[in-house]
Length: 172
Ligand SMILES: [Zn+2]
Image 1: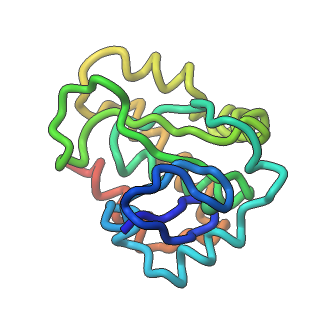
Image 2: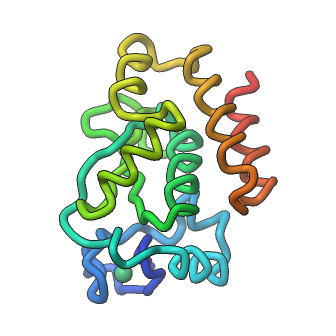
Image 3: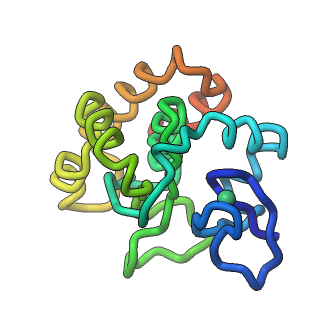
């Protein structure tokens, strides 16, 4: 089953975009969806501010892996900005692995606010790409980003479990 990352509507497999709001659909069994029961998905949908949910999707940041991308996703959502986490094109990691670069896309109307927030959290695209120019393994830069991001969202209502899970991805 497919679900809309913005409004949590369910769709049949044949659909590629949400019939209600136009966001590209994600598979309900994805890591993000698997961790989030439906009630949480609806809670997420309620946080989205409509003025940030218009326009074509544009890339505003990169996550070095699924965990970091989901932290950025949660951070933006707390500010009412819906985002889509997508595996970066042509990255040479099998689909079933949580490793690998991710793109974070937001609707055009929310992109300016998203970039501003990410700059404040030092997670803007440029800095991330610069840090990610080398190898795909976690670096001190990446870990520092996540710690700062985690600190930034601790007051924001993301569950402690997700934060702990995210940090554990960088503990090794
Ligand atoms: Zn939708």
